[in-house]
Length: 128
Image 1 (cartoon, one colour):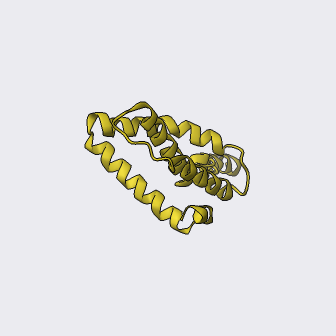
Image 2: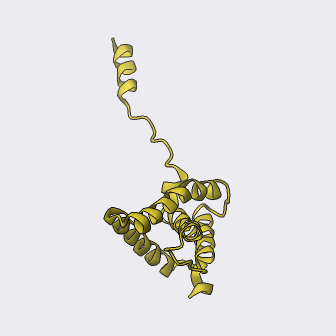
Image 3: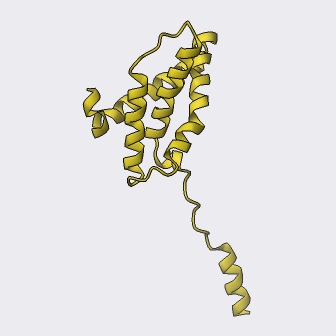
């Protein structure tokens, strides 16, 4: 009886939480890098969106911040940025082409988050 109770209890014991995906662990640096790359991609495709020549440099600074947050390891950082990049391009295209209010709100919030993160990140010293 005690063994059965212990076995049942072990089934109810919480399992260790799965590790968070790298993109969540490195938020907002990964999303901000993808945002600037996606914005650059969208600007190259759309004549309605002026290209900001600083976007690639900002994206690289956010990438470097993500690597720092990842303990100096590059592994997974570029993949996480690449995975988010197409969604960021679509966000900008939806904002520009469809004048979608939800896209504008999301874009402006993410841009604000990125700006606040960049204020305290040493990777942005050269861009200030």
